Image (cartoon, rainbow, N blue to C red; front, side, top):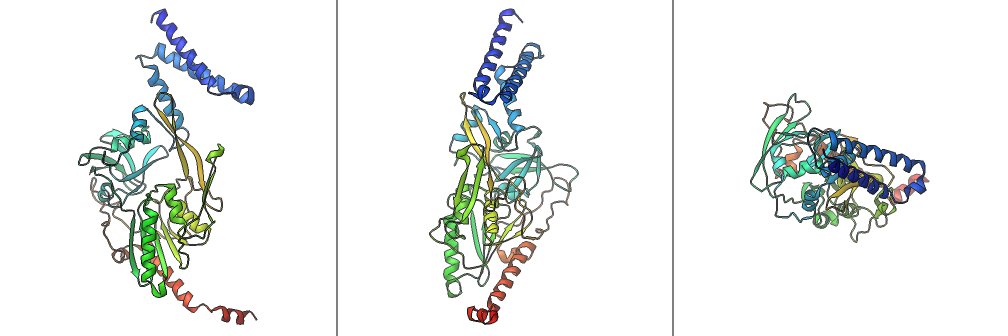
Length: 430
């Protein structure tokens, strides 16, 4: 390497150190030893960068090295923080409706492994038999080890009608199995409703979208109008395998069942503007009937906000298995070169101050879910999920969680009939 070229690299590294130092703002004067330690660590980083540029066997553009370092930094924070290069950042900003196909699957990184939160009912991933907790070890033959979440999502997107193969490792399997899936335009009807039996109703929320709360209210109004004496006698709200969605939608759904002014959820972060409180403020509240909320490992984020709030206020009994535990807020921060950060800036807390993140919601009543054929069958043979158009009556025959929820509501219904009225109560206390 010529002296002029080497000098340019030294100048570039020195400039990088200066920029990183200045980015600390007034930290050196205000934080003393902590800022001095940060400065020394930045010197170490630029020293490594200089050695790579001068001695690594292949010449690597400085930008590639720096981007890799940023990715590694964010990956070390938590599974949900990530670096978006300019291409990824632009793609995230583009309105994608009608422009790409997908699989209908919510992903996360758990223990640095690409993991399925839940497939969305009725989508290609659901029909292929993908299940919550499945680990995706390859996408089109490419290993997902050390793959960023944003990169994995990008690779799974594509033209509707195109095929993709993902390799799944599931609990109970000794080796991965390939799942060929055809991409589709993902359009999800978020609310499904039906009668379980006279007076006891069933509503399933598949995802939290802009119209979910309005569709939910319409279903509740219909049930109330058709109910005995203009009221429902019980409701099963099914949030199983619902990976979440919009925070605003979760709040709007919850406030349909809580009196005005009650806290639904709050967030806390290090920056003051990340501390927010969301309270119930619905014009129409449905609070005169008992409820059971169903959750499982595939219930995440917005689903956990709803279940946690209704549980904390004693408005519903939560039944099923431990939920996923995705309770953090990600903020998109643009950077000067057109790239961006997806950074975790706050965490969600239930009204009683319980952190959802990494813990999930513990049901009041633990009931294991329906048995599946997930762990049996020949390699490469996907399990067969129940049909998306299955009726609740058909579902009851194979679903112990729904059966238990119905039994619980029927018991409450009987107890409500046998409970003494106000006069009888007064007579007993004398």
